Image (cartoon, rainbow, N blue to C red):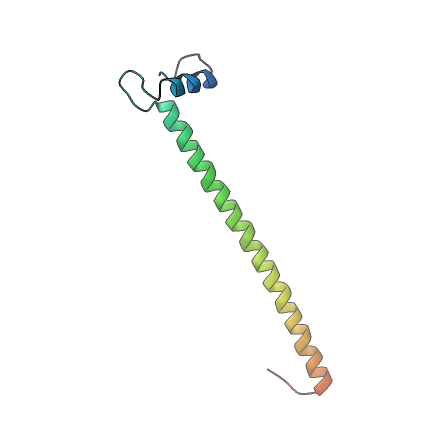
Length: 85
């Protein structure tokens, strides 16, 4: 299957599926490889985005917890006039 022919991608995919990837004694067409490669790259991008968002949420929550602990410490110092640290 040539990558420079004028067939649409859908037509090439249908032909590849019907022929089970067999094209001129080549088992995997370059189009199929490029689609596979693009799917892998998209998955890596999605995983990276999820990791970054998850990390930002965790950092934000730890900052809130840190602020609450600081307020609690100040409140305890004001109440008992003793440094608890």
